[in-house]
Image 1 (cartoon, one colour):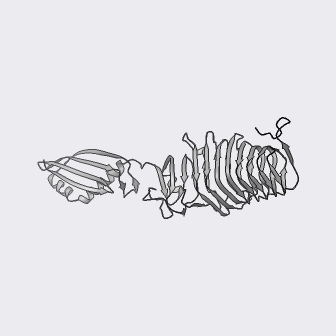
Image 2 (cartoon, rainbow, N blue to C red):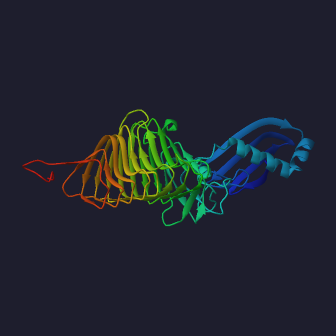
Image 3 (cartoon, rainbow, N blue to C red):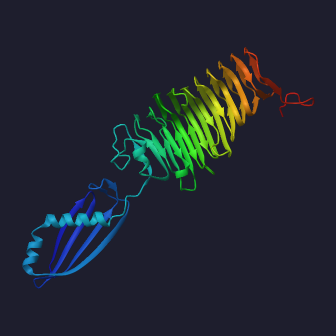
Length: 376
């Protein structure tokens, strides 16, 4: 039985066709397609599967028809490639994707073919996956709707969010169980008109947001905020992060639904905002080893919930601690050179230092006769 072989290539995918003929009449046409982890040039997508598709089409061809059939190898090769594309599954999302200042969002966001923006990369990144930066660049605003890490440590990465939010974390749109977002080493520049640097919102039961080594800067509208946690509930950690030059609050923690938002802020610096750290209903905040300075309304402003402040410098604010609701506990802090040290009522261990502040407010010592310092 004579056999004729034609081959066509798509990336590294090899398509083969064999025609088996007997007595001048074609008995059957057999097509097989084989892919071995190839980059398909036609779809620019990653083929992450390795298998053989075997299709058999039975038909009869007269000898002269067969000759004409064999005289068109390129047409046959094109048909085989088309069958390959139709038979291939949708490109799988990758566990790790990459962005570059010279990338392109039509790319698969691989190490050798990176995307241009975070928005382009996130659609090609699997749940619980990670986006990394190859080289410095501005990678655009992004909305996050699944558990993911964006980590550009050791590489300068920026989001220019003029007239919009830099990063939206929309927990109402999450469908995965982890509900965890990690943001690391991103500079968010509002270019004067930015609205919110990082906005966290939605039904956040069981959700976690970790922000590390970030700089959020330059949003001067009256409601502009560096980090706004407005979930119904959830957990927030902000570490080694600077927020400066905000028309509204540097960091706001206030539940949209009255639930609990537990926030740990460590080694955080907030400069030149209206309110440095603002706490509202449902907020439970621990602020430590931080600097809150030069804020026009107050360094720490609380209207609900509670905040514990430890080992933090609060200086050169209109009011060091402004309390209109909720509770404030202070330990081992320096409050100095504020126009008013305290407004409202705060609870203070005896190891706090209040120096060179204007008068006002009530400082209630924590402790008693048997333990005057309140410390244990």
